[in-house]
Image (cartoon, rainbow, N blue to C red; front, top):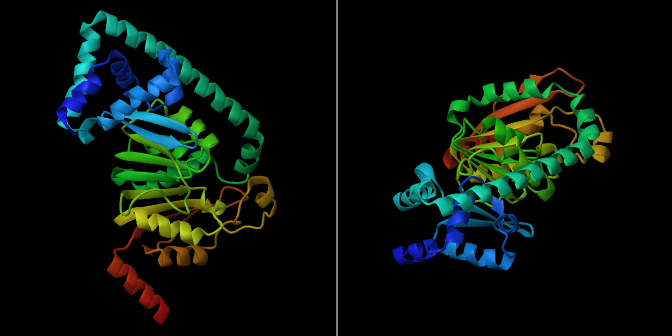
Length: 330
């Protein structure tokens, strides 16, 4: 990026205010317009200039467009780090700029409160269904503790949380992972997750709309992929695991939390479950075919539905091929 493009992008007080805003959290373009008290087309033009200069990143989620600051911390270029520090100093030394930024943050606090209210309303509308399902299995706290122990959270690296739902898993592992991508197909659930995760640094947690059947990522990008109570929604779980293997680095791990096979047929209608849990041999076949070294699952038997945790490493191509050939020979 040419240096004159960067400095032209910085030569506007509105764009400087936008950079200060998105430095604290990812915001929709409409939300930025609301904070600044400007029209959305005008704000969109400013955002286009910032994005072209590499100072901010746009991301589409359905009909909404979100803006986040360009990577910060260790992932930022020295120039980006210097610009971030310069803006912080400017707010300390320029009274007018400081006043404008303070007002922006007050309006932003109101937006955050609205998000939380909307999330609470969504939970209230669905609480009965979720509570009914939770009563059938081991407590969430026990499942989360067992999952953290199984994963050994010192080495999560870049983590992809597939079907993030409310964002609970992203919140749980935010301190342990280098970076988390929280993915969900549902825009409604992503908005709930965004409200839950908005206190976390934007450079640590990223929300993305997408489907586990066709992940919107390149190959070998993640160290850990997590399916937490998600795979039973997949019409083709084997294909979902193949996709997970594709985006994992060799030696990366997949963690699956799901139900053991059961006969509660009503869960198909009431909770849209495509699969009534998984048998151990069935899951082992899915994992082996997807190129994972199969490991014994952990069973949590504290309720009517047994929860199982599988944690398996992705094999490199040669080992995966050898395992497949051995399986066919036997």
